[in-house]
Length: 150
Image 1 (cartoon, one colour):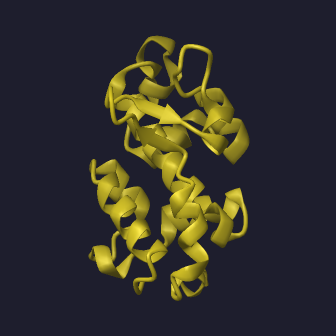
Image 2: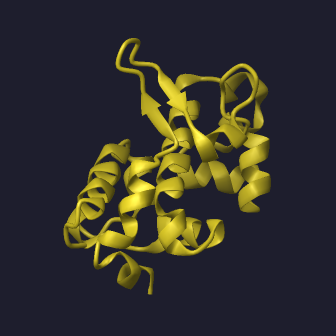
Image 3: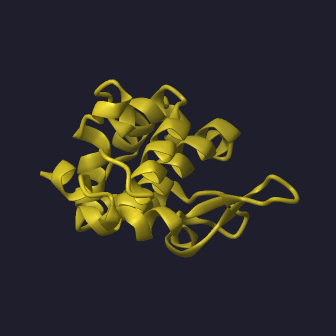
């Protein structure tokens, strides 16, 4: 279903170039753009409450989706930690990149959680983010954006 939409590669070109998170060439720090700014609080951290509201998840489901303990998402002191912030940012970046061709935020999340990626040993984007391999998903999406096969 969604895999058919990415097969040609050309439909994915625009979302891959508009990724919500970029690293600054000077400082190496994350910079948020477009879609991602909706989820960033005044301190520059991901606001997990905004994410769970937007994707209609519980905090426990969000934690499970990115491979964190539920307490990490639920306790204010742990939410701002680098591991929690990085994992949720990675998930949001991937969702932003597939949202346009997936059709909606809900479909993008469904793809992220359930669609096996043959080029990545049949693992889902969710499984790769959980294991700290979000870069492989980004590389795969870049490949598609450049016209590569799924």
